[in-house]
Amino acid sequence: MKEQELTKLYYSIGEVAELLHVNASTIRFWEKQFPQIKPKKNKKGNRLFTPAEILLLQKIALLLHKEGYTIEGAKKALKEKKEEDITNIVIDDLNKIKKRLIQILNKV
Image 1: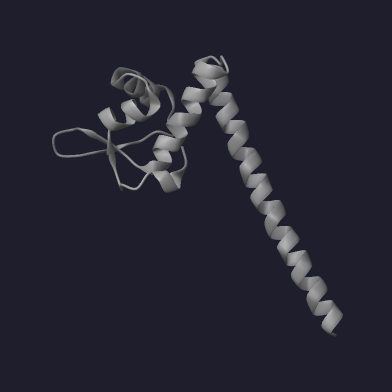
Image 2: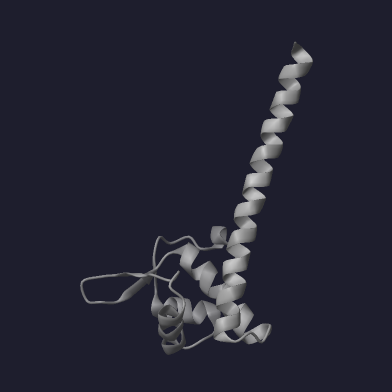
């Protein structure tokens, strides 16, 4: 599932559970275990998940159910992935700067 496929601003816990093929109680448990998951709550206290949170929950489900990670292993894997993503962003930005500087140098 990709973020473009999630067209609504917020999804209820029931909708998320259906999308991920898990129980709502599983999502509530993951919410307690993974501090990155912070759904908004309406006046009734119902959880409302953004598309980004759903994608994170999908990654968690994949790590736990398909790849056999433990909760602690999944936490570590998500942290490493985040650090890797940040590193890739920095490298991409530096490559863009380098390319631009080369263009400027060639014009002079």
